[in-house]
Length: 301
Image (cartoon, rainbow, N blue to C red; front, top):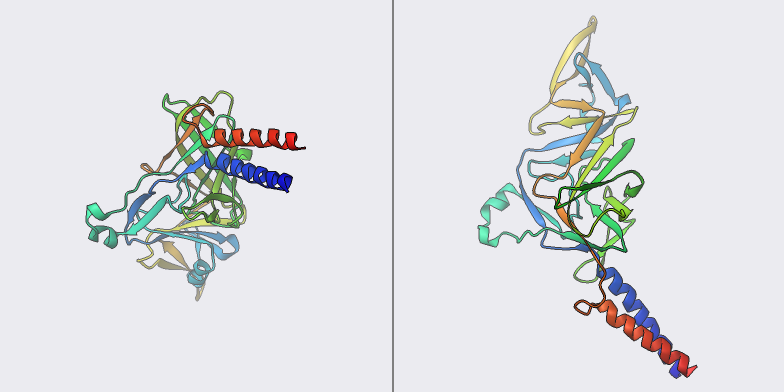
């Protein structure tokens, strides 16, 4: 019975040690940053080329079915003030308030918008994750670039195999909230998962992030500048009496879209040494308890 009790305590300490090691690093949540938004709706669309036409000024949509084509295509809807990309998760780290709500709240009652940050020990890998609100499913590629810059201005760039995107959502546990509930990634969230380079010193870094989406050979991005205003339509005579009618203005076609973290929304990352004898960290006491239980268990055996 005594051996069973010792084994149970040993298991509990190991579990606590694992939890403590995880809890000492990664995302450090503040109050979150915020932005006020306007009421000027805009959108990005990703549209199959089979649904496009070529007008006098380039690729556009047919006047006959552009509304149904827009309605059935992947879309990123936003207004002025919305963020397209941030280097931290939007849950607990970012908040949007529409213009009317923001203006009606006295400054002293506005949220305390402190940024979130990351902390890692030198023997850990970097694991960061940002919300990509402008994510459009179905693009040919998503080129992700994380840049960490220290106070001396030295920068380290991470791309390619060090980065990835969660296309479905919910595939990655990113942290536990204040109620100890697991928070999982959203669709389109972009990640950095990389070993700390040997030439990357300890210290504080600012995080910059950019994502470029390529539409591919069979799709095109369209930017609808002001969805409060109807699209302009023109017609040209092709064969009498038939006319070719197309959207002539208000839509802008592109093969790629690039989004960056806007000023004021860059966050920080800290790399620090794992020093066991400073401020009695939680893992030190757990390791000591573990060693005691192992010795005690051997004596009882």
